[in-house]
Length: 319
Image (cartoon, rainbow, N blue to C red; front, side):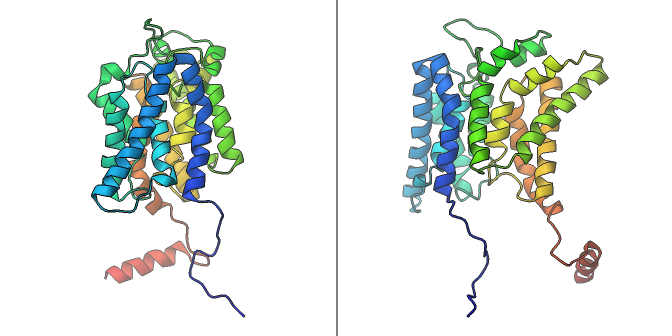
């Protein structure tokens, strides 16, 4: 007896809910450090961000009479990632506005999870940066304003690697501790939630292109400087938690490599030639927009087919 069924024939016990729950768990170390480092205001921002995302998604689905999907935890993850990218000095209404834009404008209006063309959390973050630039770049700690490590390096200074690794410096709530980010990333890799292809190529290409640009410009390139670029800002959290988003990243193997290289190029250009020291969010957003084209050009050939025959067939059909 043959069991006849439609594809896909390979099935897995994973579900959207389980995957999103694992991502949320992986974000806890870096967010926990942010609360420890920056205090109760950071915790308030995280809770408001998550609650806002869940509420806006629920309200949208109630108004449009669509099935309630908040129990898949995707809105929770969006809220956590928005909180990761907030400065600890932000006020409560900022994550509310960011969540509204990310959930409604970048996700639900395009059909919900699986049909959004860009990462909703990064869309919310970019909206806040464009709308409230001064507030989103205020990283004062205990009332004392200081430059972030990236800003310090862009100004020609240097930073301590141990400080960067542990997270004893100013910055966004969930971006300061490289150690905590890597702990969460290791959890996702061990659980096979993400592949190491995009994060590794993204980080390495960013550092390599920054080194090339500095050499062309005649600036000094040291190992400490390049490692500092990898550990500071949002590069690590962006590489492991945002660039690997299932919906807005390529599914083809070649596409993942191309996507990661594009992100590395854009991030390096933004950091070295741009007016600000950071560039991860904008790089990933632009990369998201290019994903359909990347996948179109990197679709693997069907088994047993030759590319020449496919091209000839396509031309004949056009005639």
